[in-house]
Length: 617
Image (tube, rainbow, N blue to C red):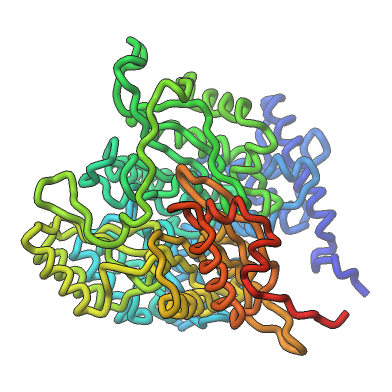
């Protein structure tokens, strides 16, 4: 009887990894001696466990192909040479280029078939996510750099969602959009239609640079140091037109903050560019006064880490080339074996920032400018209310209106209504925010009342309670196989419960995320929830870990766990009691996060009124 490890070709996984691991040494030996490396067909034989050629070092070899994918194969080979096994996702990318699957995808769509096995992962590179078992359908994630859309595109997306999806659009925490409930036969059609609309989904999922974020109020924010939308778009086009920047060790996030009134959460990104101002009194011939970007690296709040400063200061025209060099260093050195350790943060943790910056400089071919932080001025703190309601622009007589979307969702009809408002009263622009809502800019003073009435008439609102204004929720188990709870539905239930019982005079951020991936960034909320299953008697019910005290921007803080498992039915009264305690005991206008940071766990637990049930041993 065969071992469970054995394959039909007679080689175990360990033996195949041994063959692959020797490949790099043989390849190097042959190159040193001026000999040709083994052919691709022989390399494929090494992967499949068939007879292979042997190099001078006595090892089977995987040839590194010419072209954009060579750098990725070379990086994988280094892990194999150390006797390590690639993750299944890395092996899938090694076996099949996800951008050469169009014919296969069209054939599957014609047969009404969804992808299977590792093809589910590879489809994500095109923007299609098969979200079974929660929904037997595709979700399509778009790429909308800087969250900026024209009203005509917005209408087109609504029509596409109505004809090929569930009839609604979801705004994500990257100022992006998702279309859900797409049938198997409509997958490629959705991608084709998106390209016709000028919305490119390529690389929006999988191991790629995700949607590039920028200030939602870029160009009309009276507080901003610099417009960030142009550079976000430039970065977007650079990424999608360089195939070697796809297929990274893991996903990657880039954000530009221009110092405006709405936080872009650049400190939660792998690369964060934060605008700063260098005053005349600190300027030199080599460093003129003006606006620069402060470079930060390694943000990943799901792993409890914000982006950290590098000491590097960049002119705006330097950001793209530096980001490119950072990506290439990550491609060469990111982990290809352990998905949990495959983010930029772990390269930085392993190497330290000085070594990493040296590698970036080597890749870039020039040194980077270091500047002491006390020489430049940071922007004013963001306004936690500025993404909802009416706010004056820097253009005289113009305003932006922040529209509240219930946990980021709007129907196709509502999208059409918002596009009409943008056309009639604004400048045909839509801006999506990282707070799962949108902004209608350039509304004149005399049109404000009419625009507000039109927003309310379509079933949405331009004003919100302190809870609803900062309510963020991921898709949850209604459409994501990783989620343990109905985050969107339960977030709305909590908001309704609190609105009936308490009124707050300060904003509060409440974040619901369904799993440890933390798509809704629960660790930066005043109150955050991470979905889990909770034992209740003989049943397992939906519940959450509850964390408190998170923050961002000038109030950076990773929330701490208060309760490990709470059934959702117990959460509304628990949160209400916490907020009542906060209102009665706070110092002046301090935020909930500031209040929670100076109160002990025992104090907050007692105030919550919640007693975890005793479970049988």
